[in-house]
Length: 430
Image (spheres, rainbow, N blue to C red):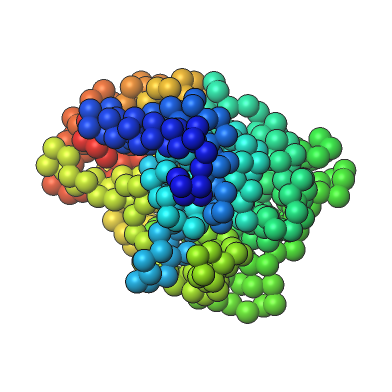
C-alpha cells in the first residue's frame, strides 16, 4: 500500500522509519534496516500488515539458505529490462522490523519477497497473506536462543493450516520436519531438493516414531504413522531438473555446490507458482531458471575479497548443516580437479551467532584431514580443540587478519569458512 492510502498513524510510522534508518546510515550505526522498522512498529503495531496490503508477497524461511534463495527468487521474478521493482530485505534483516523497512524502501513495488526468520513465519503469514511460502529446511541453530526444531515445525504447521488455496507452499519433500509442517496447507508444490543434514529429523514430528530412509534412494517414511516423502513436482537431478512427468529441464547455476542448485530449484518453482503482479505474469520454470543462472554471489557469499594482501573466497557456515554443506562443496571441487587452497576457519560466539559453540562437535571436521588449516575468531581455541580431536593438523591465530596472512604466505589465494559475525567482519574489513 502506498503512503497515500494509509491512515495518519501509519503515515507517521512510515516517516519515523525513514528518519531513523537514514540517521542510522549517516551515523555509521548499521545499514539502516532495523532501527527504523522498530520505531515504525512502536508507533503502529499493525504497520507491517498495512504496508503489505495490495502487494503480492512471497516469504522464504528455513534454517539454511534463506538469504540466497530470497535473492534468487527476486531475480527469477524480475524480467530483463523491466522497470518493475521487488521489495526485499536484501541485507538479511529477517524479522518484522527488517520487513517493515524493506516495504517502506520500495513504496511502489507491487511484489515483495521477504526472507523470514523461522520463529517469525507464523506472524508473517498472518500479516502479509502471502501468495507463496517457501520452506527450505529445519535443523538446530543458535542453541542458546532457538527453540527445539520440532516446536518450530509445529508452529509452521499451525500457521499454514488456516491458509486457503490462494497461498501456495513450496516445500522441500526431503526434510521430514518441513513435510510435516507443509502437509497442513491446502496447496503445496513438493520439491525434491535434498537434505544435507538429517540428524534432526530422525524422529517423526507427527507421532514420535522413527523416520527411516530408503537405501540408495531419496525416499523416507515413519515406521509408525503415515508421514512419508510425498510425490514431487520437481526433483534436483545430476542432469538438471526432473519433472513429475519425466521431462528433464536443463539448469545452469553460477553459485557453487549442490546446496545452491537446490536453492535455485526452490526459487524457480516458487517463481513459477507466483500470482501475477503489476500486470506482469509469473515466469515459467524454464524462464525462472534462465534468470537465476548468472547470479554468482549473494550478500558476499562466495565472493573474493582482498585482505592484508591476500585474496580470500568467503563462505558462510553458521551451524552443523551449513558447515556440512560447505564441506560437501570442497569435496565436490576437489573431485572436479580444482586446487585445494589453504583454509581459514573463523568462529565467533556473539549474540548474532549464538553464545553456545557446542555445535562444533556435530560438524564432521574429520573431512579436512590433509588440508592446510588455520583456526581463528573469538572461539578459535574451542575450534582448535575440536580440530585436534578430528586429527586435523592446524595452527591457531586469534587475529583473523593475521590468520589470513599466515594461510596465504605461500602467495596464493585462500578459502575462508566463517560463521555469521566472523563472516561479516571479514567481508567488511573490520
